[in-house]
Image (cartoon, rainbow, N blue to C red; front, side, top):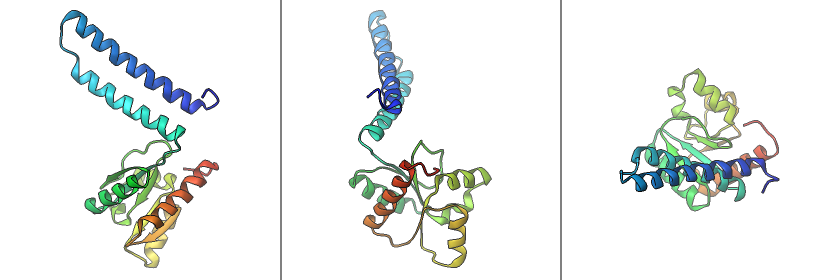
Length: 176
């Protein structure tokens, strides 16, 4: 495992977080006070995030953020991707991205992005999923440096293929 510094670092941070949680619980037990619930909740969240990083590296799990102004469709898409083995999350707006996260983005959300959001999206080389097939929408996707342009309705297998291609280009050193 030491041959993979990213995995080793994530495992170290996970172990440190769990050790801190254990110490907090032991101290609370020794002095008879209640455990610091707020602190422990933060630590559990941190531990789960670190575990996700370990899984992503060790198991080659791909993280996907599905951003769509139709929140129900975004969640259905994310659920389908999770069933296919992806670590998928849905959102109605772009949020800060995790390292290596692939973005599936509906152009309908573009209007809510500021300059920083557009730059973040551009650097992620998103997979565009939209109901629009007109030249202006395609130009917008090109401006966002999209890695793929899919017109709704999109089958999950087609989307998974685009995600695999995007993931493969990331592991070969393409910009994210």
